[in-house]
Image: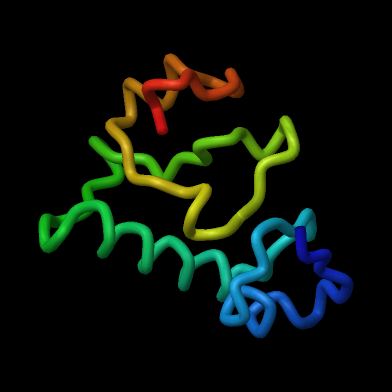
Length: 92
């Protein structure tokens, strides 16, 4: 596994395909990630914050990363029910 070292270079590390990092992203980077994930998962549908959440597959509280491969758009009620539980096999 590749190790990410500098929290100031997260965007460059994301472009290089770094699998995991445990740094807080800046607000701008977080919005960019959200836009990418929304475009990927909703495929042209409108994102509605009353219906949808951007969710961590592997919860951030349990060591999950803020990378596009760990983020997904899900229905709000499903995300609130899941909480910080670890994913089940069928979620992959």
